[in-house]
Amino acid sequence: MKILVTGGAGYIGSHTCVELLNEGHEVTIVDNLCNSNMEAVNRIEEITGKEVAFYKVDIRDREKMGQIFNENDVDAVIHFAGLKAVGESCEIPLEYYINNISGTLVMLDIMKEHGVKKIVFSSSATVYGCPETVPVKEDFPLSVTNPYGRTKLMLEEILQDVYKSDNEWNVILLRYFNPIGAHQSGRIGEDPNGIPNNLLPYITKVAIGELPQLNVFGDDYPTEDGTCIRDYIHVVDLARGHVKAIENMKNGGVEIYNLGTGKGYSVLEVIKNFEEASGKKVPYKIADRRQGDVAVIYGDPSKAKKELGWEAQYGIKEMCRDSWNWQKNNPNGYKK
Ligand code: NAD
Ligand code: UFG
Image 1 (tube, rainbow, N blue to C red):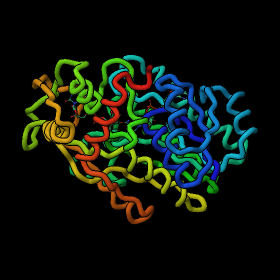
Image 2 (cartoon, helix red, strand yellow):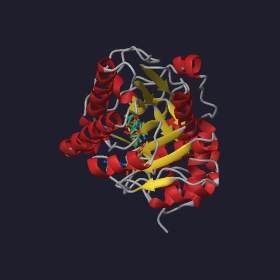
Image 3 (cartoon, helix red, strand yellow):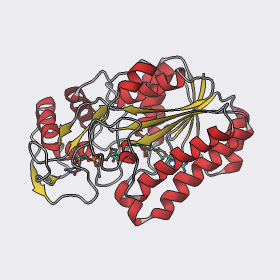
Image 4 (cartoon, rainbow, N blue to C red):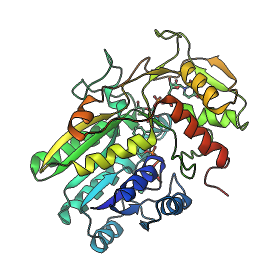
């Protein structure tokens, strides 16, 4: 298939492009590089030995998006492009609504104009809010607490409305848990700007000596060791989930899948696994809780296994090993 990947130069997008190309699909990337680097695109080509068409375009640019659809015979879209930092979304909510919501609306409108009605959308486990029980299933109640999460929930609803108005649309909403790790080659990985917000990039920067120590946000949660529990998933597994989703699209419908491992690890367990996998010590101190964190969340990924034939292959050790391999081989990320 010919797949248009928005945000394909980003962390999850770049890994997904590699898996799509490996499976014989053709890939066109649209990315404005606001949170990524052209070097990621070069490395996708290097890893796969295949070419991708790349457009440095903002998905809100109607005219250029129209041209891209004119020039490429697109079968389906995988839509990653968007802003993703929870804390930042509380400081600059309008930027988040304009980028994530308006961008998606422009893109859906252009898709409609060109008769392209297949879309896989990057949603997030954040739409489950603070779940009453775990593991969370796709039909659990939804709630959000910050503008970033609200864009995901609104876009899920918008996409469902689009399908209701025209049953030829195929919409797959993928709710990711916590993607970490990197491609085994060590050539592509997560390259956050500035001080990382997320746990694994922070840990790798401490391990390489760029940051002095990790702050563990709270050790008084109702969990065994008092730190929060999350469902970490290897980004390559996550990427393969997109390939399965695209390849298993039915003739019209909306489907929702959790993409996680179904296992939860505490912050202290992640540190321990990282230290074992890397042979590096990660100094840390216990800090205050971070506002908005839920104590425990992990997913039930059985629907994706049953319907897509997808299941995570990698465990926490491989996730930590590959995060470290990426960091150690690219101490400055994609920057020279
Ligand atoms: P990322 O920032 O690495 O990738 C997003 C890409 O989109 C970047 O390359 C950025 O330059 C591009 N982009 C942003 N706005 C754009 C616009 N208007 N036009 C064109 N390109 C634009 O983030 P990621 O971690 O790869 O996340 C991909 C998607 O998955 C996002 O939608 C994110 O919200 C979602 N998601 C991520 C996580 C996570 O923990 N990483 C968890 C759940 C969901
Ligand atoms: N943590 C620390 N110290 C840090 C960073 C994180 O202790 O420096 C802890 C957090 O408190 C949390 C865990 O590590 O308990 C994981 O935190 P992350 O920031 O890595 O991930 P979150 O679970 O908060 O959020 C991530 C994405 C969101 C997405 C959500 C879905 O950042 O975009 O997963 O569950 F919505």
